[in-house]
Length: 245
Ligand code: ADP
Ligand code: MG
Image 1 (cartoon, rainbow, N blue to C red):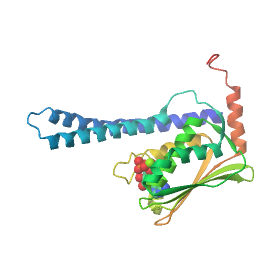
Image 2 (cartoon, helix red, strand yellow):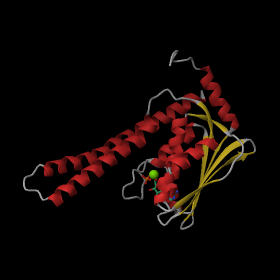
Image 3 (cartoon, rainbow, N blue to C red):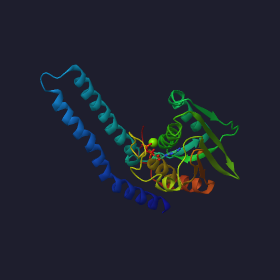
Image 4 (cartoon, rainbow, N blue to C red):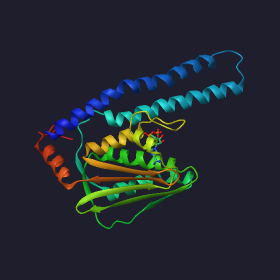
């Protein structure tokens, strides 16, 4: 039953932003169309030619980014529910983002955690959620800083901390965090946080965000053992869809 509610909520979210996504993708496409027409003009200087080409590529990348951010959420795949080791996933996210962090003079500290801590959900989506959040943290430290990733248990409940020493947010900005298309970046999509939050909530995870302007931001993501069991139980009851793989 809980499963049904989760799915309906997700569908609502997906359809409500689908229209805006279409709109956001159309903008760069219109720009590209205009510049391709200009590129066809005779006597175009080499300088203008490279300039127009650069804009086209950037706009196409932007369209691509919007679609890929959104698709993770909208993918109608049979959600793969499996056991996920959060310590491994945190290390994975740190590895994926290491060169990006390096470029921005950001150090990634992964706090040691000796135990295996398991949660339940779709591993690919969970990775995307972590990467989206960590990427924002890195982008919040244009002057460099430290991204601290920590895993642990609160009593019996798995917890993840993502902390940065970045620009932080005002109360107002914090309120808008996670709403579709909210971005303060010149080339931002405003979808990353929304997608991450939605993935985590689908996994019955809770997110607490604290932020201080000029000091940094911290996310505390917690999963309750009992909801993990409920998710597992509800998938175990589903009839098997595929017999061979
Ligand atoms: P984008 O990164 O494309 O702007 P997101 O949805 O990922 O879109 O993030 C939305 C906005 O939330 C960002 O533009 C930024 O202003 C703010 N934000 C997100 N994470 C952080 C963070 N760790 N520190 C400061 N601001 C953040
Ligand atoms: Mg982002």
